[in-house]
Length: 385
Image 1 (tube, rainbow, N blue to C red):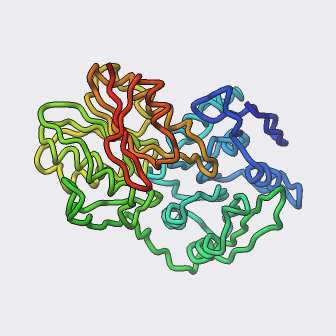
Image 2 (tube, rainbow, N blue to C red):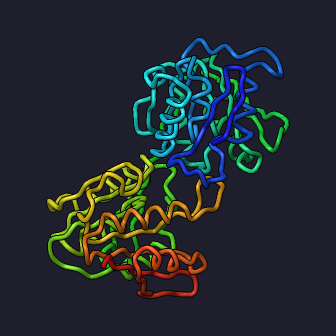
């Protein structure tokens, strides 16, 4: 836990899931810089009496600090939303005092203050700014925030092209603010997302599929080399079984599994609302017309999936959480898979060779074998005994 001190109070904040061993904070210098600006530390305090929208609040620090102004939070992260709820509860704030929306929900019709935590994905920023632009008016206060390594010329150009004239602050503790003056005369162009592309003809059951990607999905414009390698080496199975595409992204792996085994029921899971929407669109376009069973779930890995109910888990785990490199997410995915698998069920994992996932899999499952590898990637198989 870490304490964030503001003029609205002191808030003890955590990420989700909460882990006492996790040294990563639930807020950073850019969150604190934005809150100080709103308090008026470098001028007049910001009028927060209208509709306040907080876009991209990573772990709920901004939403929790501003809860007294009844903000609307818009996030693509299920884990971020869970963290927000936990932090609000810890602060003694009724969750009904804020409005929690996902990036797939309809945004407010009018926005008087728009606060933007700059995301890693430029595409997601563009998509969300274009979705919110119709609700922004000439009097809207627009302030973005991020670490200096997250704010680029392309970031500023998006604010300027979509909303209006944009400038930045000086850097403070390696954080920077973005100030944008909305120009109602700018044309309101719809978001160019989602986008689609066709897979090559050498990726097994997925060959030639049309893949749909909403903004913010990893490698949304092309098939990444790791997924290509995974698709070429997926297990060949037949018969009724329950398969999970864990951390599904655009759903191409789970869709390939469904096409390879028409009797399989596939569960697509991701903590990103944009990802699950992409996976459902990809599946429906390629396998849904044949009446194949599928479920699409935004959630925290396999939590909520009954124990011993799954036959096969396919997983390409992330090793970043925002700017931090960590294997904590992968470990939780592996542990959740072991719990969800039936005896004899299998977890197939692809990862960069240097990540050493085999060590964790042997510790959890008591076994792990290399299915295949190339100079960059390795595919591992662990069986629940």
